Image 1 (spheres, one colour):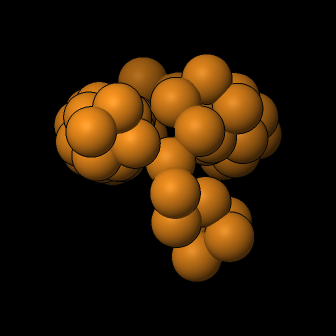
Image 2 (spheres, rainbow, N blue to C red):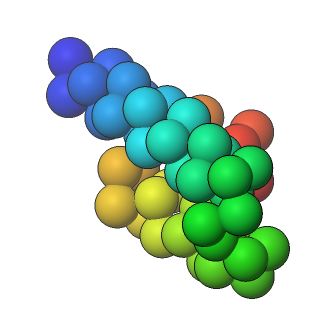
Length: 51
């Protein structure tokens, strides 16, 4: 069950991150760094697909 919860948390974080990037609150470099950190933090089961 924990894996599924991490997957949901990861997807929510990615949606918010994408929106911040689209609104020009993050540079391209910041966006990429945070995406990598999100995979490490949430350990989604499909991490290989996301990056």
